[in-house]
Length: 282
Image 1 (cartoon, rainbow, N blue to C red):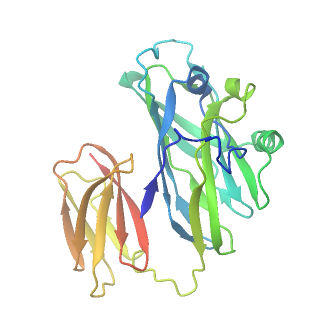
Image 2 (image 1 turned 45 degrees about the vertical axis):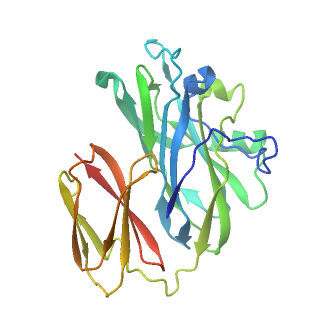
């Protein structure tokens, strides 16, 4: 099962991790207090020497006083993740900014930065066994008519099984000079397991979802099927379950006539393992 975390309660007074923070992304937002992370979808489990994707989205905080029509709303964005030693993040992370006026929609990439990573370590030292991975946008991003932003960084795991956590935060270069961390997520736990003998029954190599993009329906084909129950759950980008169905055959058609356009996550689990697959509804 994938979990949905928000950042509203980021630094509780009694939080054991309140001194642990993460880099930042788009601080005109933080600087004016105009937005917040809405969704962090991270798996509960991962296998050693592998990778997984984390879906992150941020939205306008709903304050009616927010003014996103200012033509000067441009800045370099920052992003960072607190990671266990020997883990890393795939570089060149694409991000997309959605605006209330579609003409201002824009996108770009985040690139690893040694300076930003070191600033995080210098400002708020990570605990033993962890370090900061920091990145900045390759160019200024426009926040005019800002509505939301999303990205999907890829996390590469290490070789030692165990219980770990990750943290995420956002901001920008202007805000960075005032406070290098703010509105950071709670530590999100993840268990790393040895993949020796791990069943790949639900892996992408054995599961095919098509058509993708989809409209009225999509199919789930299991290349090598064994007679057992599989639970299929569809999540929207906020982490809300909007559909569930039991799968008991090699090929299953999932009807989705009422789903709005957008990105969804199809989570499959069988009691031994679970796997999430992304699908686009158009």
